[in-house]
Image (cartoon, rainbow, N blue to C red):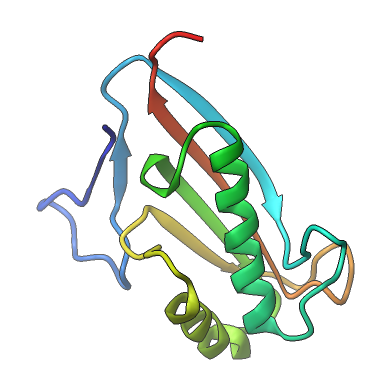
Length: 133
């Protein structure tokens, strides 16, 4: 199991996240490309909150397709295109059927993504104890 934590020698994190993740055993690593608010049928959620929820659901689907889940995440980077979308980000987290708080997370506000309709992109890394393949 990965250790998600914040050393006491640092200032407390600015939000609900931890400073690091320690992978202490031989593990399988998964690098997850940026996930968008697009469902399996190719439909983009109509608003920022919906796109964030869908992006998290897509990220979890990638994890599960690799015999992993949220507890295996060791790093998450979220890209939002507008600082005004922060309330939508908070609302989306409340709508998720799983807790994403406490993960080592970086939230970035960027000028734009590849498609101007995309409001969010979430990429991540995960590690799970190696049990042989």
